[in-house]
Amino acid sequence: MKDLVKYFKMMKYALQAKMIFILAIIFFVLGILFELTDFSNHSSSYSLASLYLALTAMYFYQLVFSTTVSKLVQSSPMKKKLQTVGPTVVTLITSLFTFTVYVVIRLIRITPQFLEDNGTTYANTYSTILFMAVWYFLFSAYMSISYKSYIISIVIVAVSVIAILVFGSTTDIFINITDKLLIGGSNPVLLIAVSLGIILIGSLIGYVISLLLYKKPISDMAVRYALRQASK
Image (cartoon, rainbow, N blue to C red; front, side):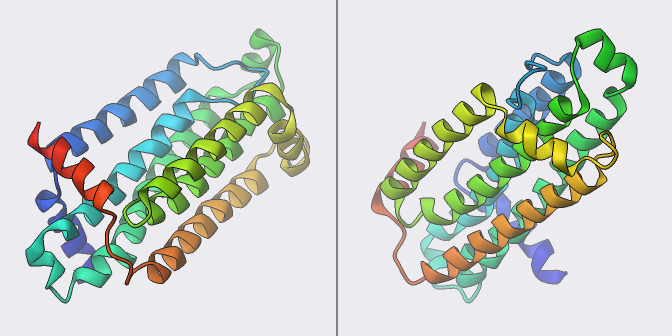
């Protein structure tokens, strides 16, 4: 618990800490607004709200990890934790928080009347929960690589994002999986449990990757980009 408090306190020393925190809040608010106003397509798993809320959590990974760019932290015994368990735990906490907010709002909004008014089904509307979990999974792996192999991480995430957007918006894969996970065709308890499992597995994989890459120096390109942004 003491280490967890330290991780959050260390965020103020991150590069562009205020700007990153503001961006996290902006994406969180936009995610909520998009969900409440429901700009998404009811016949698709694609959800801009879930994407924005997933991105919100990822900013906290950046807030913790980027503190280690400092030479002072580089020589600190906290360095390893701030590059491995620290950002993983903080991101997991914020991911679970934003995921819970999204799910609660969706559960409140999705009623038989909503389905009738929009000509959709429980499988269609709840599939965005699974869609969101996949984003968390992807971003967890991406962030654990980004500061150590910047180019590789960009390529991986670009390909993955395109694949997810294509499958989420043009196919029924998420909807079909959701339909099988809904108990009695409408109860999303199992779907939510599976989605949480995907998020936890993503965090675990991200943590393992961060341990494997710990001794690898921080990418010069990532550092230059961070410093360039901080100087603006």
